[in-house]
Image (cartoon, rainbow over all chains, first blue to last red; front, top):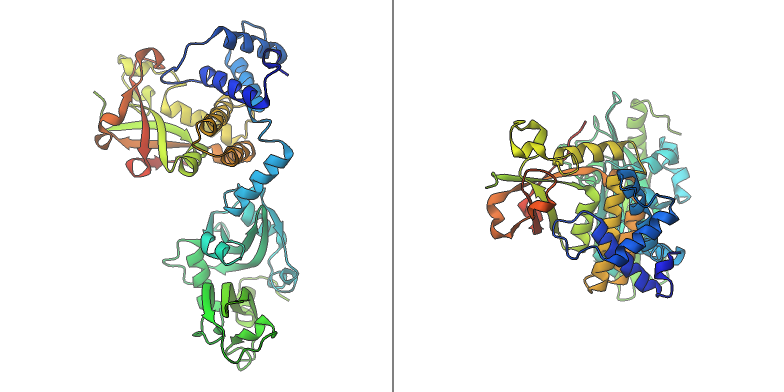
Amino acid sequence: MIHSLSGRSRDEVERTLAEVAARVLPQPFPETEFQEFDQQLLTEIKKIIGLPPADQSRKALSRIYAYLYKEITSESLSSQRASDARGRLGRRGELPPGDYNIEFKPWFKYHEEKLGIRKSAVENAMRHPDQVEHLSHEHLKARGFAPLSIYAKSRLEEADHFTLLVVSSRQEAKQTIFGAWRVYHADVDLRGSITPLQMLHAFFDRYGQEFTVGDSAPQKLILDEVYPLPDWYGAGSPDMDLFRVYGLASAGNAGFTRGYSRVNPLGVIEVAIAVTLNMTKYARDLRRHGVKTS
Amino acid sequence: MPGALLYSTNAFMKLLIQQRYRRDVHYVWCSEQYDSRMLSAYSAASLLPPSSNPADIYRQLKIDTDHGDANSLKIREQKLLFATLAVRWEKSGEITTADKDDMIYLINNSPFSLWRPLVYVIPIAAIGTRLRRVPAEQWGGGSPEHVIEDLRRSEFDIIEFQT
């Protein structure tokens, strides 16, 4: 507690300290002279942090900066306000990557782990990405979907260059993993793919299986689309009945379809993201690179 | 009379904050040379001390962020500056209380990598009368310093050295 500021509201204390800080910090056009009160406050701060009154060293300055910073920010960093700020920043995709909580759905164990992807590798890609791309935030939010992010982390030091792509959805400061795939540069044509989204398209061009949603045209990857509800869709049927995958069964291949979609009360199908992966084809290529699949 | 370019070293965090909370309008304090140590020892400009020389600021901030130095004077100075600005901008109605809290959360919780230095290279031709000369008593040494209060992102390049 700074005695010179006792009796003032928290707001006044914050503002007074900010004004003193502005005069202590280097400034090109000093706005006001250092006042007697400022000097009195600084003397008291030096006493609180155990600095001799005459100490004007860089080390002393550094400690004064740290003290003023702590005092100015203490209210904003109280647990509730900091938690609210973290949530807002998370929703906008502006949190530092390492600050998100990461959640894995059960499907990760049955698909990604069987394709040789460990949770630790996904966490590393998200906490220390080479690139991160936040997708169509406003559209998805307006449709009630959580915003999506794509992370890319390349391993170029190994003989077999690959990039781990991770797609996640953000709910405040939590990231839920939608999917994670190793993209081997020898197998997927990444020429012209600069952004994580372009890499995702290139990956599903190679390993995706065509599918339709309702009566849509066949595609391998759907992002942020709306389709009319077809006549043949019955009320109360599962949303997954709307997805039709082509070619997997006839080729004897295994695959999975994964998506965030919903049937809107207005009678349209809204899709945030949907993919179908030909697992047989993908696993075969992974094994060629020495990845153990099961 | 300054040359064709101006130089300013800034933390990456400053770029992010000005993009997000100042609509990508940047306040920069800049010098007429990047590295005063490369100048003739007999020129006044060579007298720029490390605290004002963009190259020295870059080197020091790079060392501090690479080593995760929690006691770094420059990082502490920048944190205090942004906390002070957050309070002032809120007070003047330029940002909301939520914005202020978000800014302070970011400042407080960002990894060292977000404090790494960037060099802004600013072609002087397009700046015109927006260049404000800093009073000589505020210069760090014998070389003029300038401030641009409303630099747009399209008016400067960013350089980051891999060392």
